[in-house]
Structures are given as C-alpha cells and as structure tokens.
Image 1 (tube, rainbow, N blue to C red):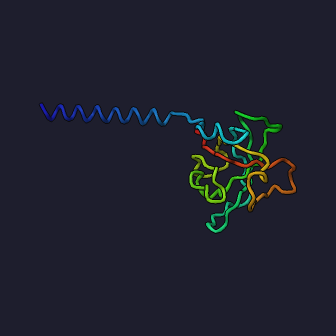
Image 2 (cartoon, one colour):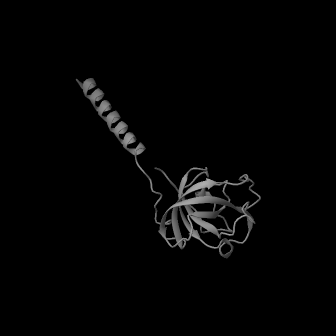
Image 3 (cartoon, rainbow, N blue to C red):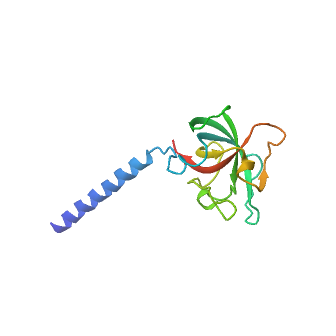
Length: 158
C-alpha cells in the first residue's frame, strides 16, 4: 500500500511539472520591465533588420555597432520614421554584462543579436550626446537619419 501511495505521489508531481513547463513554453514576453519603461526618452519595440559588417568580439576594443531596426510599436516618445539606426555598445556581450566603467547605464536581458529578432529598447538620440567612443557605422554617408543610443535592450518573445 505504501509503495502504491509513493507511485501515485510521484505521478502527481510529474504531471504538475509537465503542466507548468507546457504553460511556460506558451508564454509571451513583451520585454517590458522597470528599466526599459523608464530609462531613455524613447521606448520602442522593433525588429532587428540588419547588422552590417561583423560584430567584433575583442575584449580590448570597446565600441558601439550601428544596426538597422524596423519600428513595430512606439511606447514612449515620438519618431518621424519607422526605420531606426541604433548603436549597441559592445554587442558581442550580453546586455546584462555590457556595462563597464566607460558606459554604466546600459543593460537588458538580450544575450545575442540576431537579424529577425524583436527587441524592446529604451533609447536616446543623438548617440554623440550619450556616448563618446568608437562607433562602427556602415551606414555613414548612405543615410542622414539620426543614430540612436541603446540604453536598455530586452528580447521580445512572441
């Protein structure tokens, strides 16, 4: 009888775990958190359309890499266009580890930049007012749009 009760308890626990894992897999994450909703003067959800050139993974070189985004939703602030050029600081690092002595107020939960992914970002503009350092901008001379500075970048899961 005791063995039967133990087996029943084990099955109940497994069912509970399976149910919770299944419901987690279906969960949508909008990327909203207290930082992304308060930092920066602009907050958007946007799709990463292009990463021109190669993201350098060089621990001796701190830089911002300008990437192209298509705006899906503007949460705060105003934008004139639905295409943004955004400088991401040290993009080879996850956003949670990208901050350093030079750039303190950046972060987020994004771990890797991939074209086609959607990001919720807190932004400032123009980048030169918020970051003085190396900038890889493959769009230089091709577009006259302002370059935004990514303060906080979270991944959006649909």
